[in-house]
Amino acid sequence: MEETSIFQQYFLLRIENIFFVIAAFVSAAMLIWPAITKRGTKEIDTNKAIELINYKDALIVDVRDDSEYEEGHLPNSKHLPAEKIEERWVEITRFKDKPIVVIYKSGIRSSHASSVLQKNGFTQVHNLVGGIDAWKRASLPIVKR
Image 1 (cartoon, helix red, strand yellow):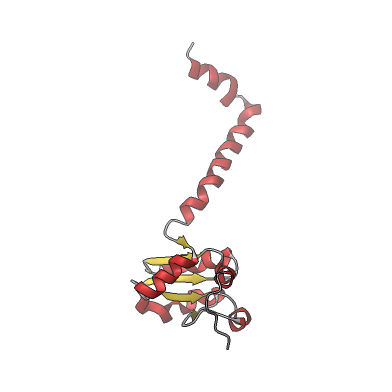
Image 2 (cartoon, helix red, strand yellow; image 1 turned 30 degrees about the vertical axis):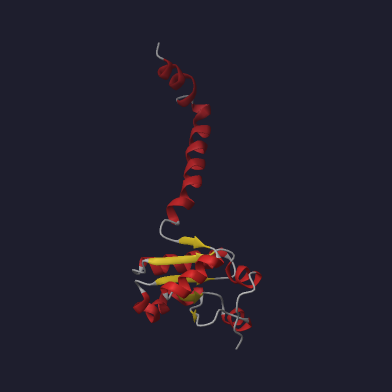
């Protein structure tokens, strides 16, 4: 008898083991999913963000809420709160082919904002790793209203 058929007869096809087979497939899918969903968004550090701002005229999009933005933000940043990004992305249409650096407080909002921008044709979307906190830790300029 072949090894494959013995394996199938005694493990895969046994009813009591089907749970383990399903769990293995679900676990594999959960491990692969983040890599698939973050396909077009690049994560960058503060040094790369500065390089994009200085040499490529990158647009900074701050997706934090109003109160967080007023506490301090990057100079010349565009404020588009994450909860309004789907309606307001058209305000930055002219930057579709320029680098965009998304600033946030935590990664959840930037991922959503980045995916909305990419879905609408923005080709160079980057998330700043660590968000505004990383910017502050690097002692980089902050503007307060």
